[in-house]
Image 1 (tube, rainbow, N blue to C red):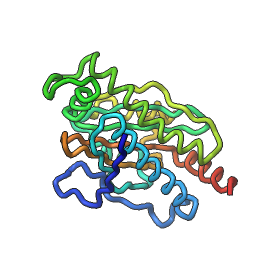
Image 2: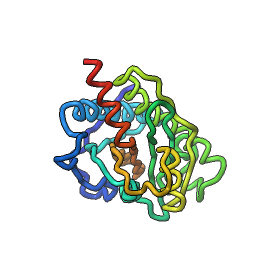
Image 3: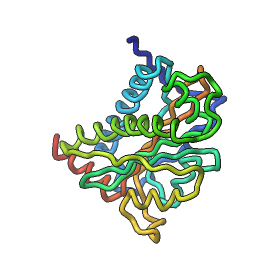
Image 4: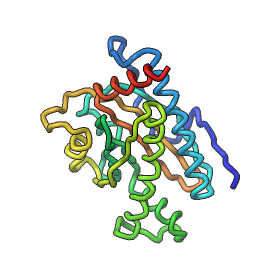
Length: 229
């Protein structure tokens, strides 16, 4: 099957962009090792876009990534967690605590389910057991690419939990903190966030993938990368 990947430098009509933030100059997560992590995850994003093309036979564009340190309480802003956004969480299993999140408008989720199940457009009008099962499997596949990237960087064996779901901001913080093994009072804790937006123009489908790691766990991973050199 032909594989086509388009790196989209600008999508003026796409309002689903991740807020542009950069690492603060005084964060210990800056430096060469962080760039190595970012480069590896960028390769991972390209692999995801190719995998989606192979699965559905449609062109999938990936927008430039962002890697930043953010307060945990601000993560909902990156997930665009309004009431029409579906968020699936895949908690990372391993020596580091993290989460891979798939965030998308409900209409994009329903369209993806229709594509996978070979249904006509408009077949699904709402979330139900039939379409959620296939979307959860889809999120596991996408999360697996990020886990593979971490394993290749660290020589460890990370895996992911089965995904959990929320619609909008309801329960978002509690589920994130559970995946990150944090208490609810830890909202001010900083986490490393890596994100990408994917766009299927022919179907007007918008998907966002976010990888979250506790700051100290990100430092552990960077140390392991350094030890592999």
